[in-house]
Image 1 (cartoon, rainbow, N blue to C red):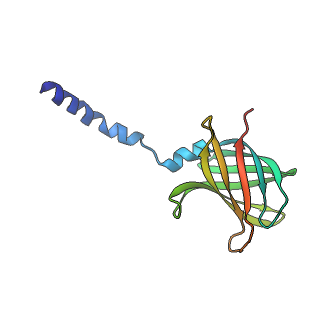
Image 2: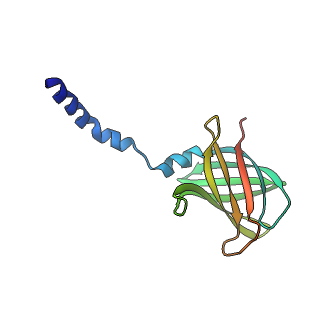
Image 3: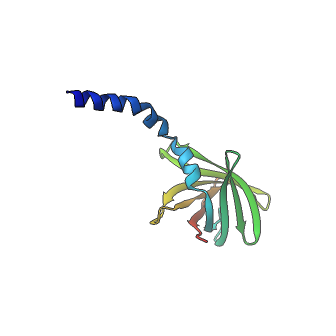
Length: 142
């Protein structure tokens, strides 16, 4: 009986520290997606494929994205948010290509080596398209 009481006391004593260690999944994913990537994609309503590279890094509590596609470097901000429809977490970004503002929503996956892998749609907010843009991001190991 003393052993059970002792175990109960220990578990009760350490319970707050366990709950404090549980973090917001969005915070974990913000760290998880940071890195260097290779990109394969195409813009909305286009048949032209492109390749490029991107970097996601955390700066001052925000995610910054630097994309280089066809020699053009584009800076963007990104954020992790909960997609209500799919009940999952996504990486959302907004960037401009040739003065056209695009938004992107990337699903966050893990590859076989436990690095982030992103895939998603590129679109213009409020504009209907028959062929949405697509991108797949693969971690680039140096």
